Length: 236
Image (cartoon, rainbow, N blue to C red; front, side, top):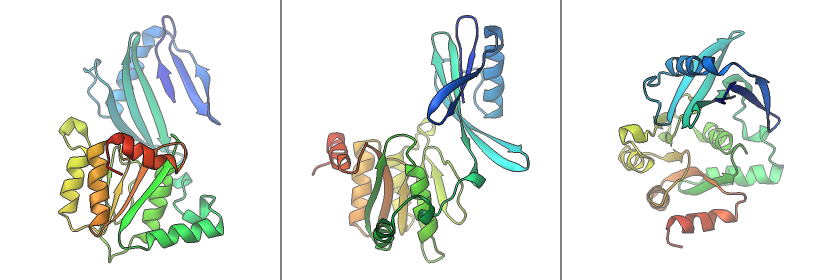
Protein backbone atom coordinates (compact mmCIF):
# COMPACT_ATOMS: atom_id res chain seq x y z
CA UNK A 1 0.00 0.00 0.00
CA UNK A 2 1.50 3.33 -1.13
CA UNK A 3 0.30 6.60 0.39
CA UNK A 4 1.98 9.55 -1.29
CA UNK A 5 1.48 13.32 -1.44
CA UNK A 6 0.68 15.42 -4.49
CA UNK A 7 -0.07 19.10 -5.07
CA UNK A 8 -3.84 18.92 -4.62
CA UNK A 9 -4.65 15.29 -3.75
CA UNK A 10 -2.89 12.42 -2.04
CA UNK A 11 -2.71 9.11 -3.82
CA UNK A 12 -3.43 5.71 -2.24
CA UNK A 13 -2.26 2.83 -4.41
CA UNK A 14 -2.31 -0.94 -3.89
CA UNK A 15 0.11 -3.30 -5.58
CA UNK A 16 -2.01 -6.04 -7.14
CA UNK A 17 -0.52 -8.77 -9.34
CA UNK A 18 2.74 -6.84 -9.51
CA UNK A 19 1.22 -3.52 -10.62
CA UNK A 20 0.26 -0.42 -8.62
CA UNK A 21 -3.41 0.56 -8.89
CA UNK A 22 -4.84 3.77 -7.49
CA UNK A 23 -7.81 3.14 -5.20
CA UNK A 24 -8.30 6.50 -3.44
CA UNK A 25 -7.43 10.20 -3.80
CA UNK A 26 -7.92 12.06 -0.48
CA UNK A 27 -7.57 15.82 -0.51
CA UNK A 28 -4.03 17.00 0.17
CA UNK A 29 -4.96 18.74 3.43
CA UNK A 30 -5.76 15.32 4.94
CA UNK A 31 -2.37 13.86 4.05
CA UNK A 32 -0.36 15.05 7.10
CA UNK A 33 -3.04 13.69 9.46
CA UNK A 34 -3.07 10.32 7.67
CA UNK A 35 0.72 10.02 7.87
CA UNK A 36 0.78 11.11 11.52
CA UNK A 37 -1.83 8.51 12.44
CA UNK A 38 0.13 5.77 10.70
CA UNK A 39 3.32 6.84 12.49
CA UNK A 40 1.58 6.81 15.88
CA UNK A 41 0.23 3.30 15.26
CA UNK A 42 3.69 2.15 14.12
CA UNK A 43 5.35 3.73 17.20
CA UNK A 44 7.44 6.09 15.10
CA UNK A 45 8.55 9.63 15.89
CA UNK A 46 5.74 11.83 14.55
CA UNK A 47 7.85 14.96 15.04
CA UNK A 48 10.56 13.70 12.69
CA UNK A 49 9.75 14.64 9.08
CA UNK A 50 13.26 14.95 7.65
CA UNK A 51 14.49 11.35 7.92
CA UNK A 52 13.14 7.98 6.75
CA UNK A 53 11.65 5.77 9.47
CA UNK A 54 10.58 2.14 9.79
CA UNK A 55 7.96 0.61 12.04
CA UNK A 56 5.35 -2.09 12.39
CA UNK A 57 1.59 -2.13 13.02
CA UNK A 58 -0.25 -5.21 14.33
CA UNK A 59 -3.96 -5.37 13.58
CA UNK A 60 -6.65 -8.06 13.82
CA UNK A 61 -8.88 -8.48 10.77
CA UNK A 62 -11.72 -11.04 10.91
CA UNK A 63 -10.00 -12.78 13.80
CA UNK A 64 -6.67 -13.00 11.97
CA UNK A 65 -3.55 -11.18 13.12
CA UNK A 66 -2.02 -9.11 10.33
CA UNK A 67 1.33 -7.32 10.54
CA UNK A 68 1.89 -4.15 8.53
CA UNK A 69 5.50 -3.20 7.93
CA UNK A 70 5.67 0.60 7.63
CA UNK A 71 8.31 2.68 5.87
CA UNK A 72 8.18 6.47 5.58
CA UNK A 73 10.22 8.64 3.24
CA UNK A 74 10.48 12.45 3.15
CA UNK A 75 9.73 13.91 -0.30
CA UNK A 76 9.50 17.46 -1.65
CA UNK A 77 5.70 17.49 -1.25
CA UNK A 78 5.60 15.72 2.11
CA UNK A 79 6.12 12.28 3.59
CA UNK A 80 5.32 9.14 1.66
CA UNK A 81 4.37 5.95 3.49
CA UNK A 82 4.53 2.39 2.23
CA UNK A 83 2.78 -0.37 4.17
CA UNK A 84 3.64 -3.98 3.41
CA UNK A 85 1.08 -6.59 4.48
CA UNK A 86 2.51 -9.63 6.27
CA UNK A 87 -0.20 -12.24 6.83
CA UNK A 88 1.40 -15.09 8.78
CA UNK A 89 -1.62 -17.36 8.31
CA UNK A 90 -1.55 -17.06 4.53
CA UNK A 91 2.17 -17.85 4.24
CA UNK A 92 3.46 -21.40 4.21
CA UNK A 93 6.96 -22.12 5.42
CA UNK A 94 7.11 -25.55 3.82
CA UNK A 95 9.89 -26.05 1.28
CA UNK A 96 7.77 -28.66 -0.48
CA UNK A 97 5.11 -26.01 -1.14
CA UNK A 98 7.44 -23.46 -2.76
CA UNK A 99 7.55 -24.93 -6.26
CA UNK A 100 10.75 -26.97 -6.07
CA UNK A 101 10.96 -30.06 -8.26
CA UNK A 102 11.67 -33.32 -6.42
CA UNK A 103 15.34 -33.39 -7.44
CA UNK A 104 15.81 -29.73 -6.44
CA UNK A 105 14.10 -30.35 -3.10
CA UNK A 106 16.39 -33.29 -2.40
CA UNK A 107 19.45 -31.18 -3.21
CA UNK A 108 18.29 -28.34 -0.94
CA UNK A 109 17.64 -30.75 1.92
CA UNK A 110 21.09 -32.24 1.39
CA UNK A 111 22.69 -28.78 1.64
CA UNK A 112 20.74 -27.96 4.79
CA UNK A 113 21.79 -31.23 6.40
CA UNK A 114 25.46 -30.20 6.30
CA UNK A 115 26.96 -29.02 9.62
CA UNK A 116 28.69 -26.01 8.07
CA UNK A 117 28.86 -23.96 4.89
CA UNK A 118 27.19 -20.99 3.23
CA UNK A 119 23.80 -21.24 1.50
CA UNK A 120 22.76 -18.16 -0.49
CA UNK A 121 19.24 -17.56 -1.80
CA UNK A 122 19.32 -15.06 -4.66
CA UNK A 123 16.70 -13.22 -6.66
CA UNK A 124 15.11 -9.81 -7.24
CA UNK A 125 12.89 -8.02 -4.72
CA UNK A 126 9.64 -9.88 -4.01
CA UNK A 127 10.82 -13.18 -5.47
CA UNK A 128 10.44 -15.11 -2.19
CA UNK A 129 13.99 -15.13 -0.81
CA UNK A 130 12.96 -14.53 2.81
CA UNK A 131 10.11 -17.06 2.59
CA UNK A 132 12.61 -19.63 1.31
CA UNK A 133 14.99 -18.90 4.20
CA UNK A 134 12.21 -19.17 6.78
CA UNK A 135 11.11 -22.47 5.22
CA UNK A 136 14.68 -23.75 5.45
CA UNK A 137 14.86 -22.73 9.11
CA UNK A 138 11.54 -24.46 9.85
CA UNK A 139 12.90 -27.63 8.25
CA UNK A 140 16.13 -27.83 10.23
CA UNK A 141 15.16 -26.35 13.59
CA UNK A 142 15.52 -28.70 16.55
CA UNK A 143 16.04 -28.57 20.30
CA UNK A 144 19.51 -29.94 19.56
CA UNK A 145 20.48 -26.89 17.49
CA UNK A 146 21.05 -23.27 18.45
CA UNK A 147 19.64 -21.25 15.55
CA UNK A 148 20.01 -17.46 15.52
CA UNK A 149 18.84 -14.99 12.90
CA UNK A 150 19.74 -11.35 12.30
CA UNK A 151 17.23 -9.44 10.19
CA UNK A 152 16.20 -5.91 9.28
CA UNK A 153 13.39 -6.06 10.08
CA UNK A 154 12.15 -9.36 11.53
CA UNK A 155 9.30 -10.09 9.12
CA UNK A 156 7.81 -13.16 10.84
CA UNK A 157 8.40 -14.42 14.34
CA UNK A 158 9.34 -18.11 14.42
CA UNK A 159 8.88 -20.35 17.45
CA UNK A 160 12.02 -21.62 19.21
CA UNK A 161 14.26 -19.40 17.06
CA UNK A 162 16.42 -16.56 18.45
CA UNK A 163 15.71 -13.61 16.15
CA UNK A 164 17.71 -10.37 16.33
CA UNK A 165 16.53 -7.11 14.78
CA UNK A 166 19.47 -5.26 13.25
CA UNK A 167 18.93 -1.54 13.69
CA UNK A 168 21.36 1.09 12.44
CA UNK A 169 19.53 3.66 14.57
CA UNK A 170 20.88 1.94 17.68
CA UNK A 171 24.22 1.11 16.00
CA UNK A 172 23.32 -2.59 15.92
CA UNK A 173 24.44 -3.25 12.37
CA UNK A 174 24.43 -6.68 10.71
CA UNK A 175 28.18 -6.95 11.22
CA UNK A 176 28.05 -6.00 14.90
CA UNK A 177 25.13 -8.37 15.55
CA UNK A 178 26.97 -11.19 13.78
CA UNK A 179 30.06 -10.75 15.94
CA UNK A 180 27.90 -11.07 19.06
CA UNK A 181 26.00 -14.05 17.64
CA UNK A 182 29.29 -15.89 17.02
CA UNK A 183 29.94 -15.67 20.77
CA UNK A 184 26.55 -17.32 21.47
CA UNK A 185 27.64 -20.83 20.40
CA UNK A 186 25.39 -20.95 17.31
CA UNK A 187 24.93 -24.00 15.09
CA UNK A 188 22.97 -22.18 12.36
CA UNK A 189 23.03 -18.46 11.54
CA UNK A 190 20.50 -16.83 9.24
CA UNK A 191 21.38 -13.38 7.89
CA UNK A 192 18.39 -11.59 6.37
CA UNK A 193 20.54 -10.01 3.67
CA UNK A 194 24.24 -9.58 2.93
CA UNK A 195 24.54 -5.87 2.15
CA UNK A 196 28.19 -4.93 2.56
CA UNK A 197 31.74 -6.24 2.57
CA UNK A 198 32.05 -6.48 6.36
CA UNK A 199 28.90 -8.57 6.72
CA UNK A 200 29.93 -10.78 3.79
CA UNK A 201 33.38 -11.44 5.23
CA UNK A 202 32.01 -12.34 8.67
CA UNK A 203 29.41 -14.64 7.09
CA UNK A 204 32.03 -16.44 5.01
CA UNK A 205 34.38 -16.73 7.98
CA UNK A 206 31.56 -18.18 10.09
CA UNK A 207 30.79 -20.71 7.37
CA UNK A 208 34.47 -21.75 7.27
CA UNK A 209 34.66 -22.22 11.03
CA UNK A 210 31.96 -24.80 11.61
CA UNK A 211 28.68 -22.91 11.23
CA UNK A 212 25.86 -23.32 8.74
CA UNK A 213 25.10 -19.83 7.40
CA UNK A 214 21.97 -18.99 5.41
CA UNK A 215 21.47 -15.64 3.72
CA UNK A 216 20.16 -13.76 0.67
CA UNK A 217 21.62 -11.58 -2.05
CA UNK A 218 19.82 -9.21 -4.40
CA UNK A 219 20.83 -10.61 -7.79
CA UNK A 220 18.83 -11.71 -10.81
CA UNK A 221 20.27 -15.23 -10.85
CA UNK A 222 22.48 -17.58 -8.87
CA UNK A 223 25.50 -17.12 -11.12
CA UNK A 224 25.58 -13.39 -10.35
CA UNK A 225 26.02 -14.06 -6.62
CA UNK A 226 29.77 -14.58 -6.97
CA UNK A 227 30.26 -11.32 -8.86
CA UNK A 228 28.06 -9.51 -6.33
CA UNK A 229 30.31 -10.65 -3.49
CA UNK A 230 33.42 -9.68 -5.46
CA UNK A 231 31.90 -6.24 -6.12
CA UNK A 232 31.43 -5.86 -2.36
CA UNK A 233 35.16 -6.39 -1.91
CA UNK A 234 35.23 -10.04 -0.87
CA UNK A 235 38.36 -11.76 -2.15
CA UNK A 236 37.66 -14.60 -4.64
